[in-house]
Each structure stands twice: as C-alpha cells, then as structure tokens.
Amino acid sequence: MARNIRFYLGLSSLVLFILCGAITFTIWFTPLYYLSAYLEKVNQVVDLSWLEIFQDYHRIIAYLNFPWIEHLSLQHFPMSSKGIFHFYEVKRLFQILYILLLTSGLLSLNFLKKLKNNQAYFYLYRPMKGLMVLPFLLIPLFLLFFDQVFVLFHQVLFNNDAWLFDPKLDPVIEILPETFFLSCFILVVVLVEGAFYYFYRLGKTSLEK
Image (spheres, one colour):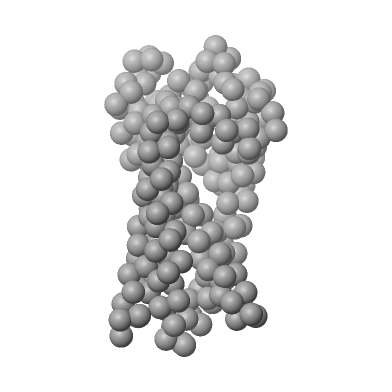
C-alpha cells in the first residue's frame, strides 16, 4: 500500500514536471509568436514595423519571466491600469509555474532514479499508455471550441475581468492574436504527448527485457 502511494506520488510529480516543462518551453519559444504574428499580419493592424512589434513583445516576455523587472513599459503601446494589472497577475502565475517546475523536477529526478536503481521502469508502461490518450482528446477540443476553452481558462485562473482588453485602451492586444494562443495550447499538448510517449516506450522496453 505504502509502495503504491509513493509510486503514484512520484508519477504525479513526473506528470506535473512534464506539463510545467512543456508550458515553459512554449513561453520561451519565440519563433511560434513570430510565425503567428506574420500569418495574422499584425504589423498592418497596428501600423508598426516588425522590429518595433518584436521589441515590445520581448519586453512583455522579459517582464513576465524575470522577477527583477518590476514594471512593464512598452515603447510603442500605451497601457491602461487594468491592462498593466492583468500582466502583473500573469507574472505571478509565471513565478508559480517556475516554482512548480523546480519542485516537481527535483521530485521527478528522485522518482526516476529509484526506478532505475530497481530496474523498474516497466511500472511506467500502463499509466503512460493511459495518459497518452488525453492529448489526442484535447487537440480536437481546442480546435472546435477554442473560444469557450479560452474564456474558461481565464475564468479559472483570474477572479476579475482585467483580461478582457479594450483595444482602444490597450492596443497591445492587437499584436497578440487569438491564433497565437491557440498555437501555444497545441504546442503544449504536443510536447506533453511526446514526453508521455517517451516514458511509455521506456516502460515498454523495460517490460520486454
């Protein structure tokens, strides 16, 4: 009983680490934003050069990721107090993400080390086989009902409506198209699926020995 509890706690840590790692990679994978912005032609919407748009995008990313940057200041976009507050809330969520990434990473490392020492990777086979189904269900859901998912996502994470940007007050939203956020969701799911598949194969190989 105690062994099962320890295993599932370790497995939960591994799944959390995979999810946090996928989100972190997506946050830093700026080519995804470049592609989304280019396809949506956001430069024509805001009448700025690509260089100016990307400079302010990187200012946003730096503010959200680095704790020592305390104020968000964009060169080409004015911001309302409501918009600034929303970015502050997102910054706090990023900080929580990195704490979870570090904590779950250390726990996962210990979990995998014990499995390796006991030649017990095969224990990963069944749970990872089951978990691999979940991403295949999520991608069609995102594609068909992304608007509803996007609203629900914000309602769960934020207890206010500051995330509802008015382009007249916060024109920065014009360079953050909905397709970009959809691409982020899909990339996270693909990365998680890839990690699940890797550990599934690891477990299967161990089982076949």
